[in-house]
Length: 104
Image 1 (cartoon, helix red, strand yellow):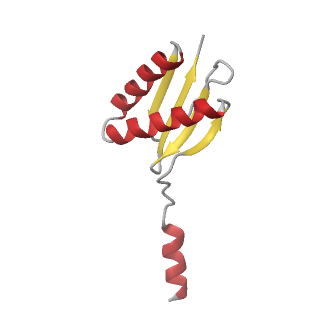
Image 2: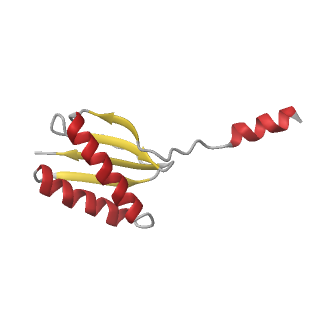
């Protein structure tokens, strides 16, 4: 019985309901604002990642200048060149990843 309970516990996925930042070099103020924007966009468009990415990009372009790029989805890898202090990579609601960066 104890082995079955341990096996079931091991099979469970850890689902984060809060944003988990994997990498960033943004300032604290910018990071806080961008994480709130990302979470609200992904909650608003939970079934359409393209619209969430579009909303994030358009808002970032208006607030922090143009040339922002945003990817929202599950199961992808990336390698980008970006302006210093202008990248954020985070996970939200389990497997949903969001990466945004600014190019010049």
